[in-house]
Image (cartoon, rainbow, N blue to C red):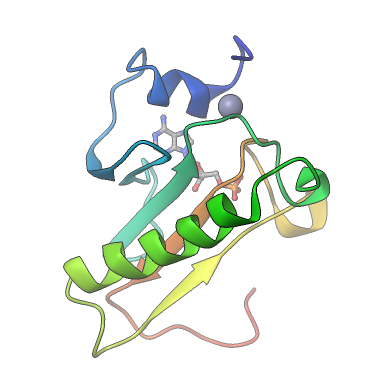
Length: 115
Ligand code: AMP
Ligand code: ZN
């Protein structure tokens, strides 16, 4: 585990977080700086850097993360109202943490295109 990866440290329980779902493959927790009434991050337990380094990742794991994102949204009562899933990569997208994560945002009307 990269010592300086904040999300690996959350997985390891070294940094506190509000976990809403976890299984053998992934963890979902509330974003510390929520951009919507519901803002959850779904991450693999394994340190996958992000969109630029998916080659070594199991396709099943990547699919699983998306299914968990949908489950988290459903459990959060967002299935009817809708929600947005986002993966940022690189400076133009404003990526801050280089450990793959899916944002699940909902509970307010969002604009398109994103800012
Ligand atoms: P990104 O810009 O896609 O890399 O998103 C990183 C997200 O991680 C941001 O929305 C941050 O608010 C969030 N974040 C950073 N540190 C923590 C933390 N300790 N607990 C929960 N969320 C965090
Ligand atoms: Zn990591």
